[in-house]
Length: 319
Image (cartoon, rainbow, N blue to C red; front, side, top):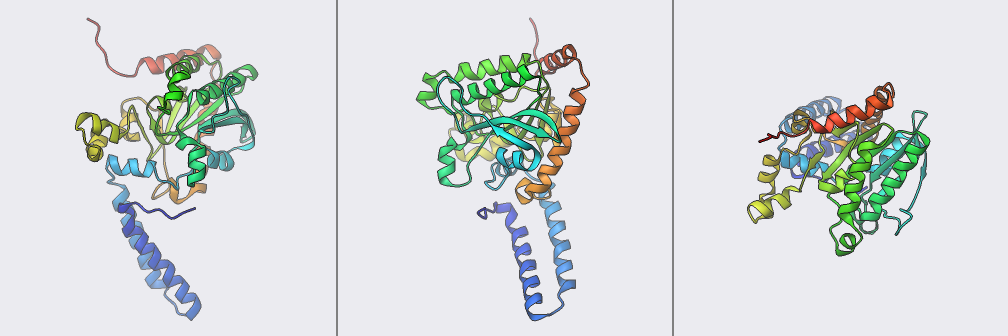
């Protein structure tokens, strides 16, 4: 995995590099640097706490987009077992921006669906940067209907800049495909748990994000438009993205306060990209708890609570 460092992470990386060099030198030269190493490690811990306790919305956006963050297939490998991927929407093609299939969570069978970004240029192009076409959302719906048919719960993992806005996507009914998913997911007769793991961008995210429990990783973002897009509309200047991010309320903390999400999943110190295994272990525990709670409900209770959950969002007045 390529090394990529955000600007505000650089002081931490410099100290960690120095610690690693001291450890290697001590091993080669048989010199005891344990006291110095311990002092630097404490300094790193203090610096991490200082930096990550006061992140701006724009810095959180940068972490959510970090190219080393775990993606859907990483979580499937680390959290689930017996994954059997299913392909195609049975109408046009197989959209590789969305992956899905049957799997098990600690022995419990379920259907998992998620956006998949690429690691290198070739994979990014093949996955269309996790921006799904209509056939991706139709594939997702096909898998959800299979889950309903066999009485299996659904897990969706959201990480996309947004649905693909190309001419072909519009010609094949992008808006209709997403709208249909919203309607069908609202009535799906099995439990649905949604986890926003990175970027939750606009309708592209919503197309697989209607759920009984909506979780969000600590440094993920969820918004109707990207900060750059918002800045371009309001100020005609994408460079004002940091100001837009602050105004939009796109962070997990804001969205939980507003009732858009149900819970925040803590990330490892420094973000999920620093420790995939720890992040996966934490997410697995939260998912197991969420599904256990939903399985206690009758079907009528499940659907009524899902309906009320989304009815409560937002504020409006009737005149």
